[in-house]
Image (cartoon, rainbow over all chains, first blue to last red; front, top):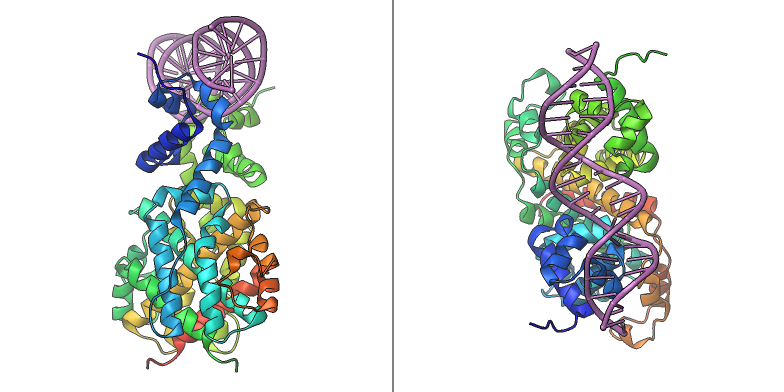
Length: 213
Length: 213
DNA sequence: ACCTGAACACCGTTCAAGT
DNA sequence: ACCTGAACACCGTTCAAGT
C-alpha cells in the first residue's frame, strides 16, 4: 500500500514517543526510521541531524507546559505554590529534564515560572534588583532540586550510601559526629523529597521576603 | 623498545587525563588505547568495560576531594562557608560534575560536606529530624545550584533568553508584569552566580536555623 | 520536492589465539 | 597472567542517484 508522505510533525511525534518511553538514549536515527517505515536518510531531509531533532523536541515540550498560576493567600504560600507546580510539571516529563539538561538548556525550564514569580515577588513588596535576586534564587533552587532528585532516583543503591555512614554512629569514620541518635537515624533513612522540597522552598522564600536588617 | 607492562592505575590515570581535558564524551576505548599505545582489548582486561572504568574514575576523584573544614564565627557563616567550599571543589572539577550526574551518583558529591554540615547544624542547636532536614536542604541546594550553574555555562546563548523576555517591559507578552524598570533591567542582565549562590544559601540557612514559630 | 541505498568513519564488546 | 587482531553489531552522517 502507499504511505502518506512523511512530514516533519510526524517525525517529531515519533521521536517524542520514543524518548518518552525509553529516554533520550533510545532515540537513534535508525530506530526512528524503522518506527516510521522510511529510510534513515529521509529523516535528515525533514528535521536535519539528530542535534536539531532534539532541539525541536525540547522546544515543543517546553511550550506545551504553558504558564503557571499561583495559589494561596500569603505571599510566601503563593511563591511556594509556583515552585511546587513547577516541580510537578517537570517531574511529569522526566525525560525532558534529562534532555534539557544534556543540551545545556536548563534556562528554558525556568520560563513557565518566571513571569509568575516576578508578579508574586513584586506583590510581596520587593523592588528592583532585590526582586530579581529573589526570583532567580527560587528558580535556581527549584530546578536544581529537581535535577538532584531525578538523579538520585536513577541509582537507588549508592555506595557508600548515606545510610552506611550514619547507621553506626560510633564507627571511627564519624568520630567528629555529635551524639544524636535521632539525627543519625534520620540521615540513615532516605529523604522524603516532596517534604524536603516544600520545607526548603518555604525556608528560602521566608528569608527572601523578610525585611532587610 | 619494550613497554613496561600496563597497569590498572596507568589506565585510570590516562582516562582521567582524557576526561579532564575534553570531557566524558571524549573518552573512547579506542582513543584511550591509542593514548596508551596498546590494543583496545587490553583495557578490558585491566578495568572491565567502559561503564566500570567511569565508575572507578568517579570513585577516585571523589575520595581525592577530601573533607571540608568550616570557617567563620556565626553558625550561619560557618554553614555558608561549607556550602561555598563545596561549590568551589565541584567547580574545580567541571567534568566530574557531568560524569557523576550522568551516572546517577549525585549523592557521592554530597559526602565531603555532609559530616561538616552535621557538625555545624548540631552546634547551632538543631537536633534530631530537624537537624537532618537542615543538612539535606543545604546539600540539595548546593549541589542543585552547581548543576544548574554548570549547565547554564555550557550554552551561553539561549533562545528566547531571559533577556529578551524582559528587555522590552511593555511588550504584549509581559502584559501581566509589574511596571518596575529596575527589576526588568536586573533580569535582562545575566546573573552573577557567585553572588546569587551566597545570597541563596545564606537566606536558606538563616531560615533553617531560626527558632520554630 | 521528497525519498532511497550504498558507503564512510566511527563506536563498545566478545572471542579465540597467542606468549 | 597478560596482550593481540579479527569480527560483530551497532552508531550518525554524507552523497549521488532516483522519482
